[in-house]
Amino acid sequence: MRNFTAKALFINITIMDSQFLIIFISGIFVALSASLLGAFIVVKRMALVGDVLSHVALPGIGLALLFGINPIFGAAVFLVAAAFGTWFIEKRTMLPPDAIIGTFFTATLALGVLLVPDHELFESMFGNLFAVKPYDAAIIIVASIIIFILTLVLSRRLTLSIAAPDLAKSIGAKPDMAYLCFLLLFALSIAMGIKLIGSVLMGALTILPATSARNIAWSLKSFLGFSVVLGVLMTSAGLIIANIFSFPPGPAVILSGIVFFFISLFFKRS
Image 1 (cartoon, one colour):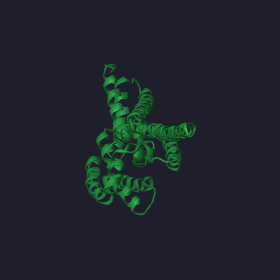
Image 2 (cartoon, rainbow, N blue to C red):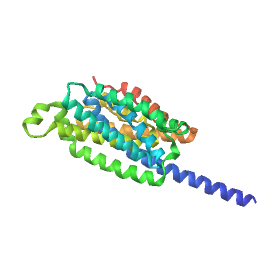
Image 3 (tube, rainbow, N blue to C red):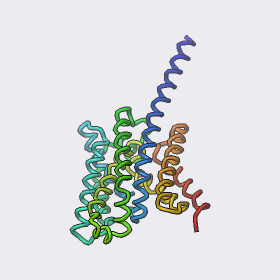
């Protein structure tokens, strides 16, 4: 009987370890894509826009749960629609992007609270360590790799369209299309992290690494590099803490990022 109990306990621990490993790897890839995009979010002074955009995923999650679809897909549809809508309205009006996304935010947050079941609402907003299954992990990892590579490919155009849009137009770089691609990649990056970090805090995962990196970077390349490294570190630390103490992963990851931010202040370049 004792041998049976010990064997069952060992199997249970092994399963939990393998589940956490899947979650941990998924989190690393989410951090890679989100923190790289976050650097451009900070440079373009759209930090609050990025934070608010993540909340648009809630009604998509609610509808996905209602129809028995993977919430990642529901979140992605609503986020991509919001990215397209922001780009289109900004081109047609003089409204700034924060005002446009703020409008989307209030409407979709209200709709999301109505659609998402009460028992799922907390997990949707703050994440759940074990909501990520192997199938979800495969989607997250593959999509995050694609987002990361596309962001690297578009990095020069994004930098030029942000720093000198008139110059970008003069050489045929089409800053409007670069901006649209940037919004779409950002929306998809947020969708990949919804299950793990939650819709409320996923936007912060894009902002915190970049703000910390800006304090210690001396060039654009170092800024992008530090942003990615710090994003991976804060996510790793947060997930490990969440696993040990059974905390929701979103708050644990973000609080780890806050610690890294305050540490970066001591190394701030003048």
